[in-house]
Image (cartoon, rainbow, N blue to C red):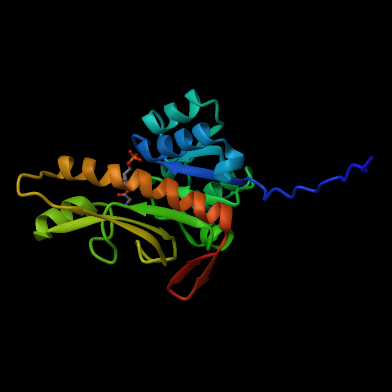
Length: 216
Ligand code: GAR
């Protein structure tokens, strides 16, 4: 009788995500749904905590419904922007994330946060960067008369929406669009892109070579 051979199965570890939100959290929900549907082991990552810069938002309610720990770090509770940045850094670090995802987080982080999480802090922006950075990417593209816009998933650096681009999705602007209709169509593309990109970088790993992101 043949002897049984012990197999060694090396599973790549599931990456830990902390997601930061400021609003309705539909991008967060898309991540949670994808992970629940295919399992964290298959997706390659799990959300271990959700943080926000304000109370009472649907993004936090979604995290609570999913049974996840949440934290709120408000600028106005701190003496200075630097003190807020240090507190946010510690709050995120407590969950030992491999990646931090800004999914509609409407704050610019500071030096300390970037020193701790630079190169593993991903943001999603509702425009085709480098066009229309900042807080009003959808409104600005519409006002400019752009015929196509979209969304950009990128690593965060010390500029405003200037970090290395990981992936982009294109959305056509329609004549009848207002900001809200256009943003909804962008978010439809954005949610799928974010889920795909975060899963790929979690499972495969990546290199940042200057402005280029190479997914391994
Ligand atoms: C998303 O469209 C995201 O790109 C945008 O906020 C929305 C959040 O939606 N972020 C920014 O504009 C950052 N400059 P959600 O709360 O439903 O995920």
